[in-house]
Image (tube, rainbow, N blue to C red; front, side):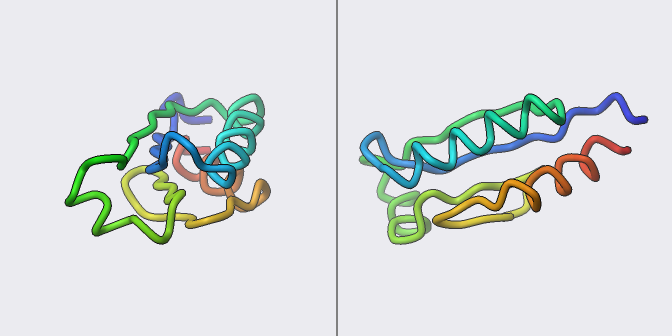
Length: 86
């Protein structure tokens, strides 16, 4: 079993229902598989708005885009297990 935690980054907006749902799925997955989570708000950042604007939330696992708009809990846990080196 690996001791590395997968890194999960979510690009989101401050007011975003889908982002709230995705955050909950990520938090639930984090109780099953250890992860390091950070969130980047794109509000007011022109470059990030251009890149992610209509696809929010966008979730990366270990630097690779894994999900946009919705997060599948089972798929996320599988990605986290791989990232954790199990």
